[in-house]
Every structure is written in C-alpha cells, then in structure tokens.
Length: 374
Ligand SMILES: Cc1ncc(COP(=O)(O)O)c(C=O)c1O
Image (cartoon, rainbow, N blue to C red; front, side):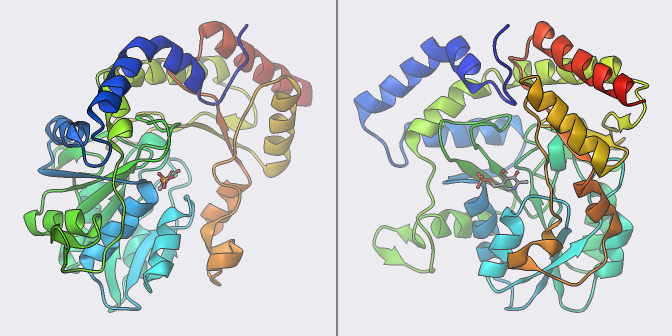
C-alpha cells in the first residue's frame, strides 16, 4: 500500500502530469509570466463557473483578505466580527491594517460562525462581518446578510477552504465567496483547487470595488506608472494560473471523490464511542476540504492522534489554539465553545487520490483504537 498523506499531491500530479506539463510549457514558450493570458482565462473561467461578476487573481489567500480590507478603506480602529475558531490569516491582516478583530463563537456541531454570537457582538464601531467557510461548508449566509444589511455592515467571506460549496436555502443561493460584498480564496497546494506554490483570488459583484481591488493588487495603478492608491505587489503568476486552469476542469470530479471518501468515513466510523463524525449544515453543500472528527475530550483526541501516527497515518489539528489565546492576538474574552473545540477536533486524510485500501486501513485503525479504550 502506498504511504498515506493528508493530501496526496504527488499522486495527483502523476495523474494529471501530461495536461499540466503541456500547459506549463506553453507559458514557458510564451514567456508571459506576469499577468499573462492564463491569468485572465482563469479569472473568466472562475467568474462564469461561480456566477460572480469579477474575479481578481492575487498572490495568495492572505493577500486576498488584505486587499479586500484595503479596498473597503475602513476607519482605523473599526471592528470586524470574525470567528475565534479559525486560521490566523484574517486576524493578522486586520491587525496589520489597524482594524480590530472581534472574536465570536462557532456552532459546536458544524464549526461555523454562530449568528447569535455575531448579533451580540455588534457595536457602533462594527463595520464588517467576516465569516470563514471552515472545512468546506458555508456559514449561515442568509441570516448573516440580513443582519449586515440591518446594521449597514460589509460582509467579507473567507472561502479559502470552501471553493465550490453552494449555499442553497429558499431565500438565498450562491457559491462560497460570492454572496458578500467581497469573497476571497486560496490556491495553496493542498486546497481543493490548489496550484504549485502560492496563489489566491478575490470575488466581487461590485464594479467599483473590483476596480479598486485590481489596482491595489498592482501597486495602486490603473494606468502604468500612475499610482492613485497605496497598493501592493500581489499578482497571481501565469504559471500558477495555467496549472489551475487544468485542475479546474477536474474540480467536479475531485469534489465527487472527496464526498465519496467522506461518506465512507461516515459509514466506517458510525456508532464508535467517544468520536463524532462531522455534522452537515442544512444550508450549503460540503466540499470536504477537511473531514474533521470531534472527540469526547482532549485525552482521547491526543491518544488517537498518537495511535494513528504509530501506524503511519497522518492526522492534523485544525486548530489547536483559539485566536484570542494566541500570543500575537491575545484578547481577554470568554469563548468556551471555540476553546473546547481546539482540544477535541482531529482531521483525517482526505483527498481525491485516497484509495479504498488506504481508507479501510485508517478506519480499521480508528475502530481498533476505540474498541481497546472501552
Ligand atoms: C481559512 C483560511 N483563510 C486564509 C488562508 C490563507 O491562504 P494562503 O495560505 O493562500 O495565504 C487559509 C490557508 O490556509 C485558510 O485556511
């Protein structure tokens, strides 16, 4: 059996090598490395696929968030509501821009931002809400957009982990990253749509924001050597765009395969004492960027992780420390759900290349471990 990876990037490249090599070779021959044809082609393909007016490629998902908040140009000290149980990128960007992250809770079952916690956190200084579509499913966008409208707030969606997820309730529908004022995503290699290095993109339906975002990502210029805004150098490389264009044609298959893997885990791990398989939100599809178990406590989680490691099975803790407890972003707030989840979650290998044999080996090891601890 091939060794198990969280995400088998070598296996994926081996499968797609002839297509990807040809696409990269074309860029090398054209030498249009910066803002070349593949970048525009990718932006158009994403715009059509996800039914959003503007897509702007940029250097990575963190820059995408930074550019989003630069484009909104909020007054210094403005408050932005965001979940404490999440990746650090958004918090880091807010602090760099002189904005204040206001951390709120997530739902203990879906791990998605909790709406009542958001509502309670709104103050006169609040200017934006920034939901994170964690692990591959979407935060509750319909009530969140209504709340934002009522209080005149911007909504910036972090869709780094959920590209392709679809929100679908009788009141609202749309793809991850396209429902708020601005959405962002990451093409980090292990993401559902990943390139061969760093990459990211920004989505918006707002024409004026799109012009600002594109200019900010290119040193604040709209005309060469004319700098109207203080911007950044944050462009998506043409080589990365060429890789992404190839992978985009396979993304629906990748998603199907990830769902099938998730379903097999659900069946194989059902009814085991002490671990819960991931709950699905009713509001959106799940693209399973992660398949994350919730263990009964930290002791069980950590010993399960060790047991898997001893059997050459990788697993990851996304995330071990809530953002308000991080040294760099410390805030004295009480967020018991987020704090508790950091001690209990464990993500298992999931990717389109995971074979049934590898997955059975993982499932059997988890079953054996749980049965031994009873
Ligand atoms: C939720 C979330 N936001 C933002 C990012 C940042 O993306 P990047 O690594 O491309 O800067 C990531 C990447 O892991 C992420 O998971």
